[in-house]
Length: 310
Image (tube, rainbow, N blue to C red; front, top):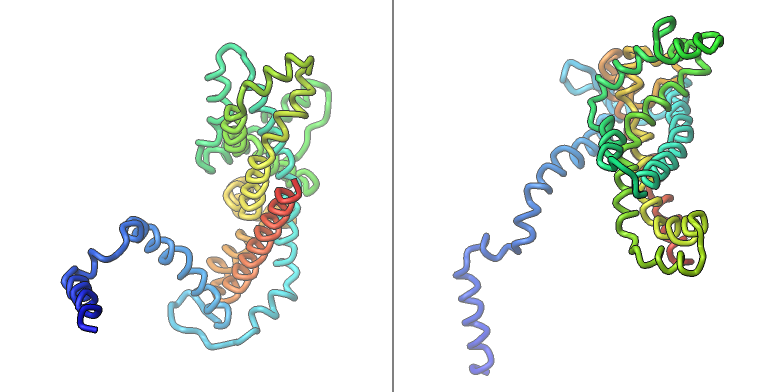
């Protein structure tokens, strides 16, 4: 018995002699800074927003009275909140398909052998580097009646001018066009990287077999881009659901004509910092956060099932 327990006691004494911080895995030490900021700026604010949704919190900083589910019941009966959510979903449905398809077309054009390829890549990606304030200022001038670029072109063609920022039927399309010009460069870059990862041998073998460009596109290129397309769709849907900057700046925080383009995040901002109802705004933002999580889970499940079938 002594010969069995002695090595164990010796190992235990050696372990006790090693400092605690030396026994922490090196990988955990490298991830601690990220975990700290992740908990401080994402996990804690999310939990705190959920807590505030049950209180009548105001800007004074003092703890408001506990109201239970009152904020939640008010949210489900608030027509303006549901209108903001409808505008957000409508923008997501309108903007996601062109942002994916245009990014793919731009990548296909740039990936072909053509002169000044670097210039095309730079011009496609450059708008994505601009801040939201600059983008909004550019498109406010473009949409201006009389001297704006779009209405000027319509007048030159003998067509009537359009109120891109003042007509409710065109306001949402104005946001979609602005967002497309501004952010499509990111999707273009992802598609371009995926296209360059496809082995050239596939195309050479298809060309030997007599396949044309269109056949190679449908048989080689698009099937090879399935995972990239799935990733872009997920990222684009999440980005579109969180729209705020361009809408707020294009209409100076007014939500557009009749609030037709005011997204959920702008309504949360107005409720918090204009009406000073932080508890009610926390209930809306928490509900919207759960909605985004559900949408993301459904998307990942759909793409996972498609990959398993393929």
